Amino acid sequence: MESKKEWSEKMAKIEVKCRNCGETQVVKYGKSRSGEQRYYCRNAECETTIFQLEYKNKGCEPGIEQKIIKMAVNASGVRDTSRVLEISTYKVSSTLKKRKQS
Image (tube, rainbow, N blue to C red; front, side, top):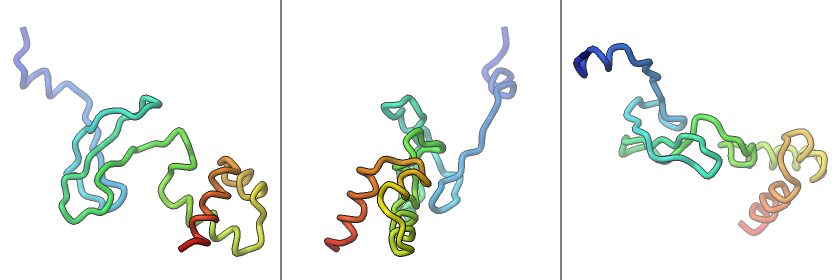
């Protein structure tokens, strides 16, 4: 029978870096509703503490709201923006409404 050390050396290891700060002080933090693995950044200075490596819903990806606003400034409509970014028209309109209120 193999020891734990020998067994752990044979396992594949994936180094996960935080999307925000780039640190490797990351631990698993459960799964999302869609089944994707969530991660928790232990860096105290990091703004985003919980993140996923891949998002099934493109509307939840980091930076998507800035892309929506940029397209709106360049005179793209709601339907055009949703088609190009492959997100729902609801996400586009709600982002623009939030931006208008603040």
